[in-house]
Length: 254
Image 1: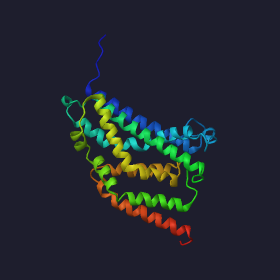
Image 2: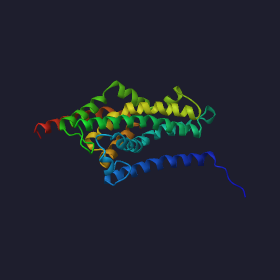
Image 3: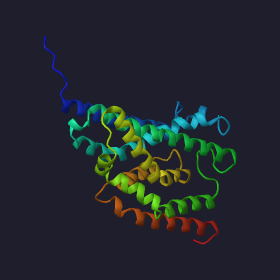
Image 4: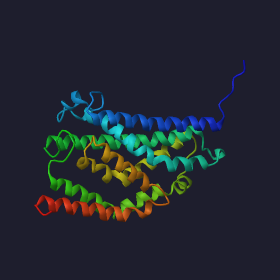
């Protein structure tokens, strides 16, 4: 009986299906978390550990959140990688390496956010749902996110995310390990681009599907070359305006 080998196009399809399945699985876990179901992702039993010893309750939650929200922003870069010639070392294994390196950097970022949340819980700055306890803190987070949109660091990181072909050409490394190194670089730029928006989860709520969905759509749009560069400054103005509204409401001015 003859067996057919997997051709390059079908292998590519399997990789993309696996990639999107991982994103879908992460969103399903988030949905379970948002419903308040008991499970290994910050269910009621895990929440009882907070704030002390809560890092290991929160770290898996942040891993799932970053997988659901940040992996979609890698799609433009992965599509560009596919256009590179195989003879230069742009292999299927290298494609997987890019994903792995990118995910590893965001895993470190998840650990940082989880540690920050535990610290904020221990100091009474957040409640057990991960929401800030003061409107002034909410205003400050929006102001920080808005001001960061105008910073040179934000502009540089976003420009790197918007030009993946230029990134791959200037930092090219062939094969699996090379893909991981390039993916890690893309992840570092993505963290630099998106950390302030992710931090707004402390206002919107860590289990809010509405906030996570809106933030994901915005961060994906920021990575699209056709429109991303036109969103940065209007988004900054909107975030600063939101901060002002929250501050005025805090002092009783509607």
